[in-house]
Length: 321
Length: 297
Image (cartoon, rainbow over the protein chains, first blue to last red):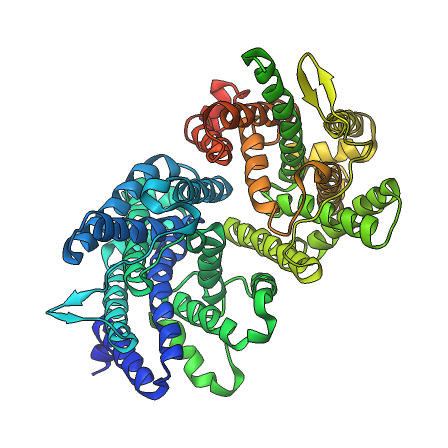
């Protein structure tokens, strides 16, 4: 029984069931919409958490991969008339190939150099979205992206799309939890702790780092695909530096060492702005304050923080995930 | 206008823009040398400088030069405060933590600027009129001359500071070997603080002198920081002279490509250079082959 409870399948299934239950409780279409965006953000941050927490690398260009995924499927379906079941794998494939090509030189760098290189990459992609008028429509973007249709059913309302997105989130979580518990996951932890030692005991560090980078780009592209067919309109503003930084913030606030940390951080920073409406545009100020105080007071993030009145659970939480 | 004078025009504006990149790059280098940190909020020091001087001059009606002076002082105090509150309390931080902290500071500065001054762009009158000076069919704004002379002054001052003053020498010692520096009695912690103050000071100056040409808004810092970092990397991180040369080269390339190729992609030029240098010569253009091989980037 305990084994089943601890299995990644059970955890993902619980997440999905919880999400469906949550929708039944919430019902308000506006809030369901926000939870859909939460699901998309989760897909990206779970990948980013693998990269930051497990492989110990940083990417400040994740919004670019999200954008490449979204634009590829958008352009394929609206301008070239591709069906969605083709555009989805193609958009992921395109993103993954780009990530692979730029990842080879980029991941040779470390720390600050890596951060700046990914930042630069993200900004270049953003400029291309703005300037490649014939394909992307430039700063004003383009719309009329078709809705997703599966088994003859069009996902034309938020409730259907919600189930679809969260099923994918659960699947991604399942995949990632299994990855962490595998040989690869242990090798990643070794890289994070001490890269040199890892390579002396036979871990191919550069290949592994590259694979996780590409994987996280693939996740971001999948989220981009979901975004494009939900909002049905794309403009470069969505895929700016600001979003990349926000994604890193989510992972860092929740805790880099654990996937559940990313889940907590993403949930917190996606839902928080909705309750900070009276701050309007100044949510950015609140993010800054939250991020800097967490980094100073608790650099390992919120995950696993001991809350006095549930002392018993705190110890248990530390072990799972 | 014929091609030659057009080229001269691009050259002049390229040098002007490049001087600003050079100043940002100098700021990066000063902090990097004493701490090994890349300060992602470097560009925001420039933004704050611009915002403050506009506020002091236009809203509080200080004379321009006094406003500029006060601004520079305040910005370096912000630099000190940032170091004391966010960098100093950390115990054995990982690189990722440091990166995220300076990013958080950058977000905070941006958010604060937006909170206080809103999202509009602000304009500051030039220091000495807007009458362009004609040089062989090309024109140069008097403000560009101000920028160039300030860059020259800053470089001279830094050179004297690091060569002739005790504090400067102590900072240099820290950049070579922190441990050895602290053994001979240098207070490494206060050197770190001074480096933040100095780097913010240069950022503040850059903000004050560039605002009459480029305007300023709360979001101006990130791209400027990224390009300045490009210059710092191009010249070799930590290399002051390299930073100045590289900044001006990047400014020139940007200006040529805006004029001759496409203005839309001009922002990408500095970034592409940044990436190419990072990929192929992460030690910068002035680093020797041996150094490149030994150092880990």
